[in-house]
Image 1 (cartoon, each protein chain N blue to C red):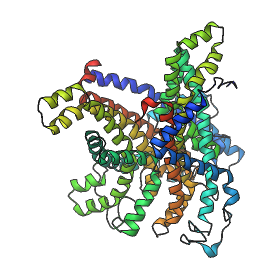
Image 2 (cartoon, each protein chain N blue to C red; image 1 turned 45 degrees about the vertical axis):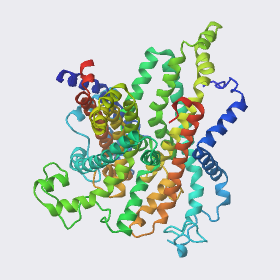
Image 3 (cartoon, one colour; image 1 turned 180 degrees about the horizontal axis):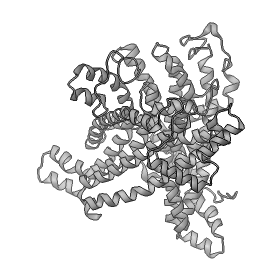
Length: 337
Length: 293
């Protein structure tokens, strides 16, 4: 098992190298003079050339690349012009907010989509199957920022069930002591039910927005995968042997249908990490997505850079985790490797 | 690309037409989506000439009005007519979507066919490029590209094309790979056609229908992506009417109850994406009946 994980880790290396090369190129292809860009519009000729030497832009590209990789290895992603902090610190401080939101969204989505897909496959052609198809088609067509705004209008303005979309916690409350960085978990760990409730009231609407967005691919894949497995011989045998339908569907069919569903999760994460940026903007969520947007608007380049790199590496690691999960779910994968 | 990509005659028109009629009658949704598509196309072409108001003209006396007979979709904070702006925006959104899809269709299609047909190094290089793009969360990569290349509409088109590149490569590569030793390819090779000519004149027309399905399936995604980018303030600049940026402008009014500013551009955007997705499914049924769901 461990040698397999190690082997899989090795295959992630080319992806990470590719990611680093692309993010490096993205800084160096800035239109016009990068040094002048960093110096600002009012800089003198001398200031620009000073910055050029300071940034190492007067050296050849391969040399610059080595310097860039060295910086990355020491965790130096540059400094944000707006916050004045090192980018890596900013990202570290804001990542838990994004992660909490994304993971909760994914959790809600799985809790709804997987049962929906299973039921649609078991009762093929019934109303629930049609519902599944409608969800799958509408889900991929909904712009996530628009769903978010609609939910805000309905649940905040009309019904008043949700607080104003202004961040992670109402300003009456102080954030719980940081243990995991997830407000929901930390407030429970410190036994502060009030803060938990406040954090929950802020997070459920953006999380549902993300969940609606990622429902479609998961539901669609669950249904397709379950249909294929339900038609196979071993399910027929299990049925013929008189096992309870629930045992056949969950214990036999679903376990075997899991693999393609987990594969889809990789794609879902790609979508979710992107959608997260838009949802963070709608709900003024203080995560790394809104950090990148603020930086983009003020043409503060280092944070955008760091954000793209952080997201890409996170995504590569998530895909790695999904692959390792494979081996746990399906022993066949382990034996083949 | 050479000019002669489509040289084979299509199968008998009559058969295709009746097949199309069958598809539409079996699934009326496809018919509806074709109708919607025509409507969007019409709005993109003649929209700016028929709208009741100037989409850029502000009229502060009529600011923030709810939908009425005079302003079907209401007015925004500057008193601009939202209906006119939504209709006029169609052209820009369609241009972004069509241009980016056309770009990736040519680049990704060619790279995919070449890598499927030649294999070897071509395949490895194209595959490596695709893998690297896929290693990024796609929307995030698009943000990074637009930020690096500069904040313009052209760069939104390029970024959208780049993030769709692996999808086109995958389809074209698989299809070209199946056909590389097909009878008609061997016949073409035997009669002395150059490799490039076989690639573009014989293989490309063969996989064109499947690529077209891919086009309409990714068109919706291209619109969503472009609107998402302009929602966060990239590419299109105010006061240019564009669906994503209009939703962004209306976003701050949602919490005070002026829902129509963001709602109508948002719904139009959703309908456009919906329309292209259904169109893609319908087109797939038409071209590739085996994969029908």
